[in-house]
Amino acid sequence: MSFRIIVLAKQVPDTRNVGKDAMKADGTVNRAALPAIFNPEDLNALELALRIKDQRKDCEVIILTMGPFRAAEIIREAMYRGADRGYLITDRKFAGSDTLATSYAISLAVKKLEPYHLVISGRQAIDGDTAQVGPQTAEKLSLPQITYAEEIAEVSEKHIVVKRRLERGIEVVKSPLPAAVTVHSSAPACRQRVAKLLMKYKHARTVTELQNETKDYTELYDQRPYLQIDEWTVDDLHADVAMLGLSGSPTKVKKIENVVFAHKDSKVLSASDEDINNLMKDLIDSHVIG
Amino acid sequence: MNNIFVYCELTEEKTIADVSLELLSKGRRLATELGVKLEAIVIGSDLKRIEDQVFPFGVDVVHVADENRLFPYTTLPHASLVLHIFHHEKPEIAIFGATSIGRDLAPRIASALRCGLTADCTSLEIGDHFENKTQTEYKNLLYQIRPAFGGNIIATIINPETRPQMATVREGVMKKEVFDPKYKGQVKKVNVSAVLRDEDFMVQIIERHMEASKINIKNAQVIIAGGYGVGSRENFQLLYDLADVLGAQVGASRAAVDAGFSEHERQIGQTGVTVRPKLYIACGISGAVQHRAGMDQSAQIISINTDPNAPINHIADYTIIGSITDVIPKMIRYYKANSK
Ligand SMILES: Cc1cc2nc3c(=O)[nH]c(=O)nc-3n(C[C@H](O)[C@H](O)[C@H](O)COP(=O)(O)OP(=O)(O)OC[C@H]3O[C@@H](n4cnc5c(N)ncnc54)[C@H](O)[C@@H]3O)c2cc1C
Ligand SMILES: Nc1ncnc2c1ncn2[C@@H]1O[C@H](COP(=O)(O)O)[C@@H](O)[C@H]1O
Image (cartoon, rainbow over all chains, first blue to last red; front, top):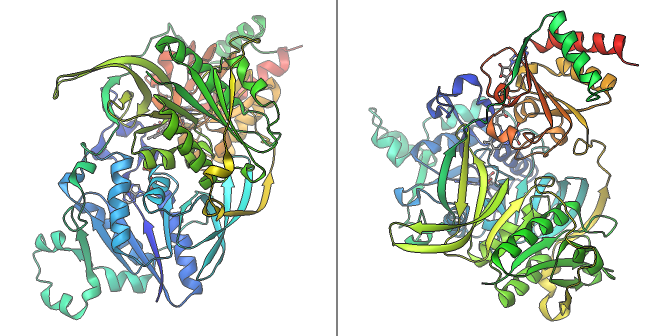
């Protein structure tokens, strides 16, 4: 039996670059201006998985992602860096899922991939920073969880030793396998694409993507079945629809408010010596500084 | 209606962590508003008279699970004990710190109970809800309020159907306030050995190094905060120079941290530290709602920004239109020449 690692990865809008250009005049984010990226800590997670693969010949790294059709992009991205294959969980019925419903769907997909040794995810996705899906998936699979991993110090068939990065220090823990690990951004950065793998996997597609291709891939796929990225729907997962999407999500958004700035009467100053000197004088005189 | 529960964390010195005392303070207010009791959970070892630390915050009942394997924190035994208590007590509301521990534990609990959890709330309130689809009226729900991705947007999240209503809150967001120094509640000892199984200890800690954080911006009187507009790690040095002469601390926006200009411990905002200094100087920070959530209670705000229309300027007392590379050296020069 191979040593199987399942990496959970999410495609997210790049909230780190919500600069001025990404904002619309009304103060809301122009999503179209935000590129969709591989969630940063999921790349750290992939790297930790690939490092195990570097050490063990029998290791297989599988990427699992839930999202719209285009999320297949990050499965290919992971393949270019060394992942063996990937599955895209996609279905309209998943829309509106909160972290509880998401972890339910992901846990069903992980079960389909039994037997596995490790489920590795990022600590948190930058679109919500919730850090909930990792522990929730662990709970649904009755796995022990090791959060905030920075390094995997040791792996055997039966155990794993992990260094964790906490707010005020580090901890090294040992857990039996299978286990769930969430990875912190202080873990090593992910390796770059490998040219050979880029050549090998550049035609990897999901069924849906193939339908939209003008070229006929039938022959290529007969020869190279590994190019097929599987899509799993609610039916494939035998999921209980009541536990998915909006109905399976106990958190509801009651309202969304645009923050109206409580405008202060801001004194506007220039960068001239005079303006700055006057300001500093005021601050010193009023004992705010000094 | 059932009661409000706060999971209390322990520091290395086995005192109740500040974040938990802050949550007890908020919990007390919510409990009084709802006319229910405030209950605390403390899990650890050698917890002699730990109740004395929580009663002044208005705790009516404290559940204490005391056993030598329960400190330091590990996920599975703490989760089993919290779930055991929740199964019996059926809390209405449960609040956890948005800390390494709380963010490890709360999602595990929420998943096991299939209930909703909102991370990093910046405000908690009580309110009603009318569900149009089902024509159902819900009284006294917990409004879990946090900035949402999507610009200057604040979202109010509710869990109409599931209990407990769960939320995590970062340290410093709520105010720590003693309710009554003489307040006395009741202690309930948890029968730990009856709840825990050997499997709960399958993850072992084999090494541990904790250090006191060197960076302490939470209690600083003056904060010089830099954003993406500072431009580089080298330019950030200007902020340190100004902080040095003013005796201030340096903070950062998430964009500055992500760009590698500053350490994560200095991040201010919804997912960083919340600060309330006398003076906050925002340098090259646009003022996204997630950032403002952590600093808008500063007594005075100065914004230094090249963009006259940057949102931060609207909450600033002074706005200096200019580049930080120009303005900060001038501030340092004047202060050096004129302070006593
Ligand atoms: C779930 C989530 C949680 C988040 N949590 C946080 C959080 O805790 N804290 C936080 O800060 N952000 C947080 N963010 C990010 C937040 O939405 C913004 O993206 C971020 O605060 C922007 O940082 P900034 O103002 O430094 O950068 P920008 O928005 O890029 O602003 C840069 C500013 O610098 C000005 N500037 C440029 N050059 C100069 C110069 N030479 N001199 C002076 N000014 C100049 C520009 O005019 C601009 O106003 C979070 C986002 C999400 C989605
Ligand atoms: N839709 C998804 N598909 C795959 N993995 C996910 C998904 N959502 C969350 N994850 C994983 O769970 C981690 C935490 O996500 P979050 O709870 O949203 O902050 C992420 O870093 C991913 O590894």
